[in-house]
Amino acid sequence: MVMIRVESPGRVNLIGEHTDYTFGYVMPMAINLYTILEGEKAEVVTLYSEHFKEEKFFSLDQLYKENTWIDYIKGIYWVLKKEGYNIGGIKGKILGNLPIGAGLSSSASLELAVMAFLDKAYSLNLSRLEMALLAKKAENEFVGVPCGILDQFAIAFGKKGHAIFLDTDTLSYEYIPFPSDVSVLVFYTGVKRELASSAYAERRKIAEESLRFLGKRTSKNVDESELIKLPSLYRKFFGYIVRENRRVLEVRDALKNGNIEKVGEILTRAHWDIARNYGVSSEELDFFVRKARELRAYGARLTGAGFGGSAIALVDKEKAEEVGKAVLEEYGKKFPWKAEYFIVEPSDGVR
Image (cartoon, rainbow, N blue to C red; front, side):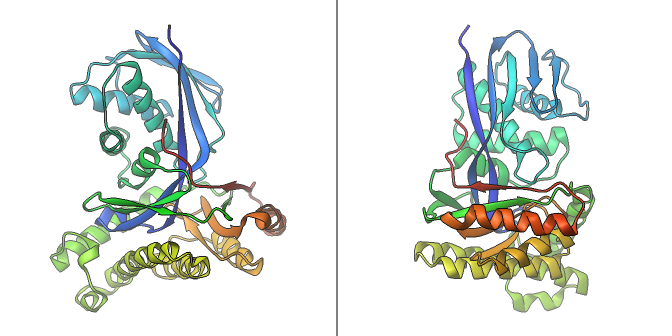
């Protein structure tokens, strides 16, 4: 049997948080931490997870949810079968160094790893866009997580040395060079995002209702002057989204001009806006942002849905380790959680 090995990256979102479900702008990048799937074709699916230290098994007519990690894999099978693709099983193992539950999109990374494996093993000839859209559909409709396209797109389309400027409305995108002498310091707070799903759903609902109320299809087309028409909580939440869309454009232009100081300033401003007006930050995330700035990071902000998970800081490459260690030490004195940091750079997409 032919062994196939897939490397599927995680992602961080530089800027453009909670904008994708209103068809706004985002700027993610795939990162050099990976989910690895090694295996061969088989009749059924038998996969061992190195992280969970367990093997799971299902046949292709057993596609019902178990509420465990295997659901992400079943979801990919479910969506491909639903779309009429002819696929078989996998026998193999899942490993890698991408942390799970840290807000670096380990679930989308796993989905794309399985998708790319099946594409190769069963000659499906899927484009990267098809892979991303099908994986999103699996997560929305099978797993039941109402995510936007950001994670799957970043992992499918990642490019070494570049961030991706993406219009989530038209799915048009542009690769934006990321400076090679700057590292992204990812700080995982150790706080599992327990709150995230219910609060995320509430914010998504308010954002979608705001669009309907304003008669707009996408948040890109809303001007701040129009927010006066919304009830106060809606105005507060949706105002953040409108400003965040504008910041993505500003970061895109500042990166093109090589102005990393400006990029950092915008990221920090974005953090305090999402903390004060969208209410998805936490004491731990705010602590990291303050500390990173004190230690001369260009800028810092939470990344991902918020409520715990991870934050990022942009730091000179030679200082990244020192800043990471210093923040971790201070953080450990103040909070009981087991935090960790990673120094990452933009990576190629799933392969």
